Length: 444
View 1 (tube, rainbow, N blue to C red):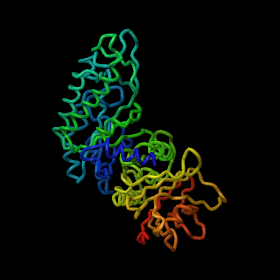
View 2: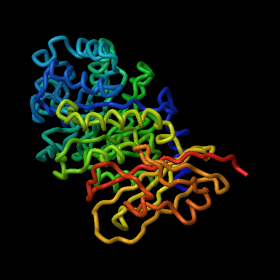
View 3: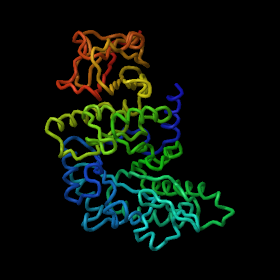
View 4: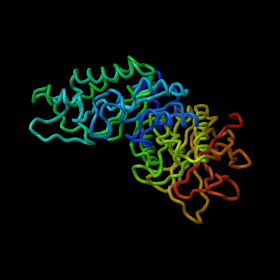
């Protein structure tokens, strides 16, 4: 109940603007597909396949600007690289729009590489303690956003890009923690003000951009910088809660995040395999079944998938489009914790208790297991519900009552008396299933 109170508070009182109550577009981000190795033609090819599968938004990630061919250069120079994008971001966005898709773009506006034109022109614009060796992370330094002239310069560069291109989404990364929190603009006896002034500068940049581009969806970042505080939801209604995109890891990440944050605020994507962080091979259906309890997207090149996998993706996207309002804005319940056992389970229920979706995830497969069930929550006790798996297979020949599902539970055992039909191909470890519940009788 406390979590649901937080979800309402954060989702309806902190979040605001055009996207607050709107289901989020299904996106394809190019980062895990290409990293820094791309050009305009390869991006359009990736976007074209994504469009065929039903993706609505293509996002160009890191590497499009300045001398950014690796993570050692270019941060702070927010100008498109003409060798990669001869027609700039405006030209690429026109081609993406021509495919019938929206386009989004990656920025990391608070950071700078020393190998950049911005740093060479303004070496005193970074946070650093005089007389000490500076501390960097990922070859980058933190710009001093406590200074208005720094924020103004970044704002002007971003607006130059956004004014020319037709964009609907900004991924605002923040990939390292703040260290050496010393501003060259303040005397020694006022350095305690720096951290507070810094975040006010971040808010100022957000506010100016939001006012100028009110229909752009901003996604903030809690990855390397660990910044996913409620205050950020006032400016960006969703956050990329971790660069750890492995679906098994994400069970714990998303379960923990859900204690305070609504699902509409949790950026969750289907990553490639082997996963780039943990090198785990998780089945495609499980990657999608985890990611659908969030904003949902893909971090891979769909051109690399086999035909049967592409059909799975098309079905996943159809399912998400049919159910994303319920998944992102329904009442959320945690049923079984990944921190306490081998099975994770959660569910969302519509406000009128006529619909629900249950996510069930098993990390490791075991033999000769007893009958297992999960007790549901939030249903109307005096209604009967049809229960279908995500493959539209019936759970039982009869519709159980809400009271039965909440007190006796939903049977999740595989293959017991034909009660559960699963996919044609069984994966064993890292398996998952979605159950769709629809009320078939009115409340008594």
